[in-house]
Image 1 (cartoon, rainbow, N blue to C red):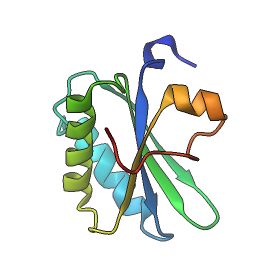
Image 2: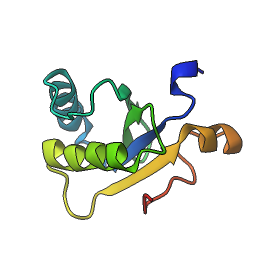
Image 3: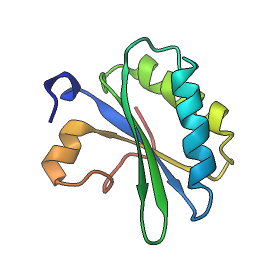
Length: 111
């Protein structure tokens, strides 16, 4: 809804139940500690607790900047120490508006 985010998107990490609190804490510390090194590109983070899984997402302002998006992805994987089989997807906010869903139809293969 915020105009400054209209061209952005979000990285989505789907988590099995029971681990979200640790990942959320690690993410917040990384954000506050400036570990992402993308300037003011990150505009939010959300933890969505669901019935079968929890969803962690990091929002950024420039979905079309591959460099920025990949830097965020790399840092997310590093600071959260995600396992190799972690589900990591990217979705542009314009796509969310188009299909009226925050998490459905996200892209597993960014680019």
